[in-house]
Amino acid sequence: MFTICNDSHSDFILLGFSDKPYLEKILFWVILIFYCLTTAGNTVIILVSFKDPRLHIPMYYFLSNLSLLDLCFTSSCVPQMLVNFWAPERTISYIGCAIQLYVFLWLGTTECVLLVVMAVDRYVAVCHPLQYTTIMHPKLCLQLAILAWGTGLIQSLIQSPATLQLPFCSHQRVDDIVCEVPALIQVSSADTNSIEIQIFIASIVLLVVPLVIILSSYGAIAKAVLRIKSIAGQKKAFGTCTSHLLVVSLFYGTVTAVYLQPKSHYAHEQGKFLTLFYTVVTPTLNPLIYTLRNKEVKGALIRLRKKTWDIRNN
Image 1 (cartoon, rainbow, N blue to C red):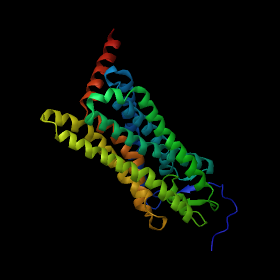
Image 2: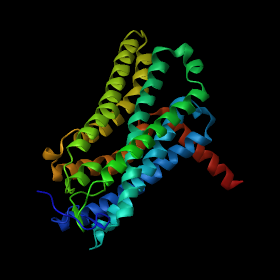
Image 3: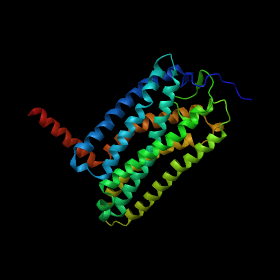
Image 4: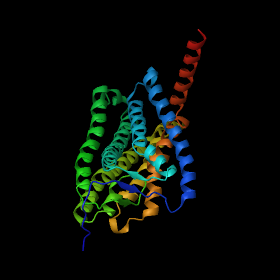
């Protein structure tokens, strides 16, 4: 027996952690700090990658794409999240929820593909160093970036309308912190088996397959690095890859936990914290991981700071 709905286009209520108001006040300040760090850290990486000629190589081109992606990703949901955690009103309009869903899916899928592209770049750099500049030429890098962003857009244009076409009752209470697919299908009054199958297939294609490619790439990289006789050479090769592997682990570990479980097993409390992690924590950690573990980025930051200081003093 399904509930009859008179208006599927009315406002949604994002419940968040409304049953724990004290937690929401703490999370407000924590998320605000993380958002400021995300904005500052990723902006610095984009600026440094653009300004420093030594970083005009494929690795940092894709890294700046990831930083831009993280900036947009967090900005698509964190401001609304902060408003909901602080203000008594937790509503988001149907149009606002739809826009958030489209952007959220677009950028989330793009990151899945972009991380694969970055893994392939590292594979070519380590396993085929002599042909690296020939293979990873600027035109191919641009095409791979367009592929990542384009794949995300196509997935969003397919999945978002299918989700929004589900019937939602008036003043639907979404037990989540953002408008994302698993939470929205929870409040639909219709049979969602078909869309759950669609989500599962999309997750296999866009989450599991990319993860297999990434792990396969790093398996080949590990074999190639172990053949290097120089210990210093091994450390340098591993150093350029461990940062990316850490980012992959943080992102895929949380996203797969949310999107690969069926609706009936969707744990609301667990799902909220996982969503919080990959929308707030991971984008903040990405620039820190790449700068703290990367001598070239740290060197570029020092050169940029010196250049800025010289300009101010002249």
